[in-house]
Length: 391
Image (cartoon, rainbow, N blue to C red):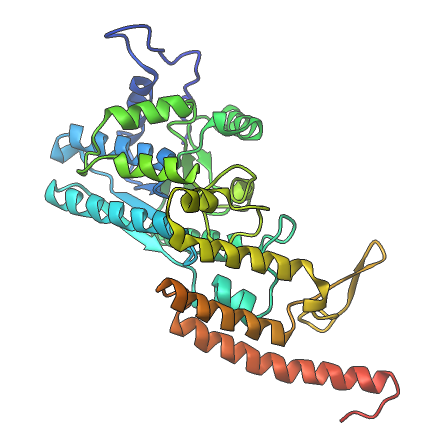
């Protein structure tokens, strides 16, 4: 499934009125891929941020430009809700998905949109409050796999099984970072236009806007009206208020560094991988004072994580571990988990938002019951090993 991989050298630059632009090259490349002689569906990884919005817009425009009989390949939009998304971002995502669905149905386009979620046993609160996992760090980023990769890949796997394969369109661009540029160029050199997915067999990745920079993306969005209706003004305002960038749909562990960087990014409001959530701070400074309690709660979670007195001396399996002669502490103590839950419920009352579901609460209490029994057994074994009489 190789194809030519366009580069800045062979893509036309805009040199004046009427001259071809780099976007013309992108459109031609996408059209060529769509017209290939197979029926594998396109899957657009759509987070609602500027890059994925541009990819979605180009896909929608491409379908509209084709006669109905040539729209042979389905287009599936794969979005993800971690259930702890930044509130304004998830509201914007859901609203835009609804507009895309309605427009596709009205225009009879083969476009289908799905918003995936982590299974209840994998959510942020079940792991932090239930199992006592410390909030994520750069070296212990347990959240990405459970909350993003698994639900997205489960959905794509189903499509691959149904159609025999799939082409995944992502809004990754070389100008995002030097590492991203090297990674994309290495894959282009090895595989051409389509790169095999690292985890899903018969799924190939296509990065149509890889050669665009920020200005290219914003100019196109500002100059164009979304083909599904409305304007991009809400998206522009969201970025302006939050000083943020999109935290993309993460599809493999190789994409993890793009989530939780030090640059302002839209992502989970609970994210403690970053030292400070500058996008949430930006929203508060822009007048969205309702989000200040969320920001303070996130900072409090981060402080809890840094105090080893809040954590058990043993890991969840009862073992002890040392690194460089220093003890590696285990999960949060039970009393700390209960404290987090109580404060989270107070936060719900304060903000008027549901932050934890009833299903999560059921799983959390089930985990607590099992953990209490297990940790009591560990305690008895420890007392016996120290020559004490077990209670």
